[in-house]
Length: 108
View 1 (tube, rainbow, N blue to C red):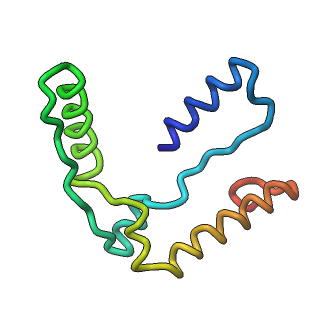
View 2 (cartoon, one colour):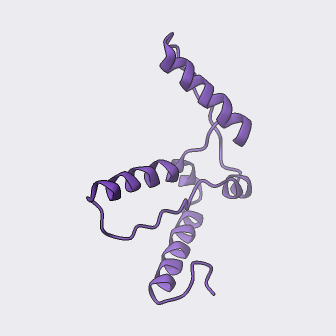
């Protein structure tokens, strides 16, 4: 999703509709979090469409699963780990606050 968001923001900036600085970072549902918290994966349904859209969608599923493993994990998987999710968000806000105070994104 961050890549999609970044593409949309770049398009808005090119049109002149975005003057603010925007920072996009994937906070949750990372591979490390999925592994550490043993978050559930669910199968990704393939398209039954016969046209090129269905074929392209199914190819993206195959490529995704080759890169990330079978299935997908959704954000609501964190419902079983509410404190872990709060920590992820709190840590991100602290990093952002540090960046706004002149520190680097790495906390240096």
